[in-house]
Length: 341
Image (cartoon, rainbow, N blue to C red):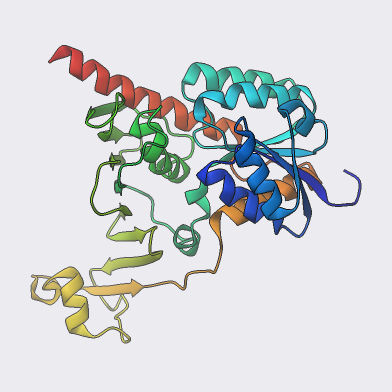
């Protein structure tokens, strides 16, 4: 690509779209050309706020940009991306990349016939807490809880596609190349016609089991995950954000390390009476520093970098399709369970 700033356009100016618009306007290596939304007033409002052009149609925006950021309802992702890719425009598509595996695979088929960059917005990959724990244990058990207060936004899809998809992507990221061998799931609809609360137990061929819970009807929001390995575990709080890493050695003289900077009483409050067991244990505790990163801003920076260098994006379309496939299998399990009861 020739030298110069990458020209970006935002498609969709809802709640999340306004965040993308604000952050895209501040990118160093990109120029925010304009925005488009089927709601003309919303587009004009955002365009005025960032002194860019409100486009009258998707076709007009596509004709003026190098890359477009698609932040529209999930049900429209395929149609918008199809038009952009046909015009030779690179695409950033918010998660989930599609509302069904059929649509996701159709998008993959379309993209494979082009030379375009397609990045999927699985933003938790860029959460500062997740980035802070680079040396993760080989997962044997994963537990995640993602709870949110109810909002009419995104109720056009099940909570599995709306919220659980974040943790599905993180699990698949930590288990590259492994496809589930067994899925057990249950869920209920309460305030919408779609599944509002869901739990899934997913077993992988390497022996890891992931237990994921998602709800969009909760008084207290929560975004937490714990990953247990061989005598070690990581505890993430993606909302705070923070991360704690614990590991255990059976013999302090052979690889075990104590925790000189942590008061024993504090450690006991975290792990219980660890010094009262039958074996002498050495506990290693780390609380890595959290980098100051805006996750959405970072994924947009990397999208621009991929456009400039013509290199694969950090979250590929294939990875987005893989997450949708697992999400659809979970929803299918829930629906089958309902009909069989």
